[in-house]
Length: 199
Ligand code: HEC
Image (cartoon, rainbow, N blue to C red):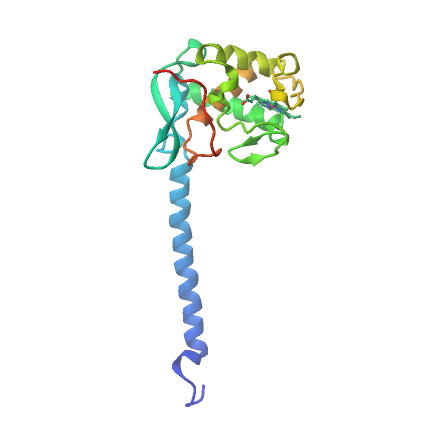
């Protein structure tokens, strides 16, 4: 460095700056990662614990946020059978693994990820096409076990193929879909209207 160069033109200054910026970015990244993990983990504020499948889930307008948010209500166990937190996790996990193994994302989107051939499944549990809450579980089960035989197609002419899902796997998929519908997705999918919910 000659005497004419300003202080900020020295190699030493830029070396220190590089080290400092890298160290600060690293800390910010760790904080953001921990924050994201807390937001994503089941049992948090946004993603309820798996035992939420024992409760009634509705979708209600939040005036402050300007979109609908899931609301967790009274007891409404899936298929009339209340399960422990561990059993709920096992059931939801079986459903998730089935969804992965059968590659549902080849046609559907889940939480926005996947393909656009078939409806988004994020709020499928609350979809008006199941008619009403009393009929929903048996209709979903019948549909998953024999989609072509119970096709609705919604005027699109598209049919879901039979994916050879077992009865046990179908119960898991329904638990997974119910749990997923309870996740606060910031109003995604946009403008989704739930089935008639009553009081
Ligand atoms: C080859 C494409 C394809 C694959 C793979 C597929 N689906 Fe579908 N699915 C469809 C189509 C098309 C529809 C709409 C037609 C209908 O409901 O009969 C549909 C409808 C649905 C519905 C009803 C959605 C609603 O809101 O009413 C559910 C639930 C569903 N699929 C679940 C699944 C699950 C779970 C898997 C994986 C195990 C899966 N699908 C794999 C094509 C597919």
